[in-house]
Length: 194
Image (cartoon, rainbow, N blue to C red; front, side, top):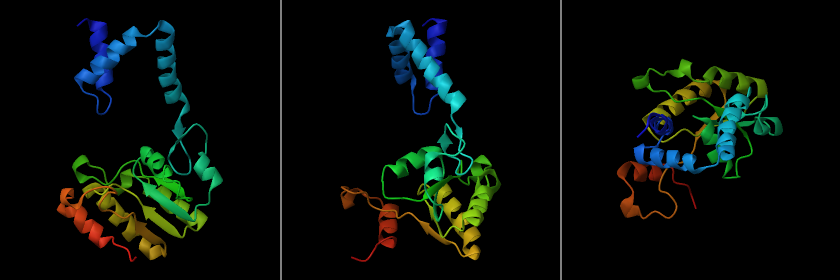
């Protein structure tokens, strides 16, 4: 493989979840495109990097000072998520009408990431500013997500703010025989009355 092609493959390999074969396929696809298509592709990457920034309120990605969610909804209920991509996932539900707060990570001692490395001070400021009534913690159901949720709950309880965690358990359409013990335990603990 020649040097420019190797560099292109390596550039694609630097993306999360992209292995050598996929990176190679992307590189060969780029080479098949016209010069104008390649230019448009490259310009879209440069433009996104240049124009997209963090919302001053919630920390989500936006091309404005304040994102559309923060500018159009009340902050009486704040849904706390770990990463900007989680906001998009939550928005697909179309049920939640509050605002979000992006922590930009979770507590992870193995990676030397503690509470001071997250946007927790900004969360406290928003809660005080908007007299928030409830904070929903929607971090991943893993060790880091659980540690972060527990930390936030302990921090907010004395303030009189209701702190909830999204329910966890068996996915819709899943056979119980394929669910692991932890998932079933969480499903039982998160059960609701019919």
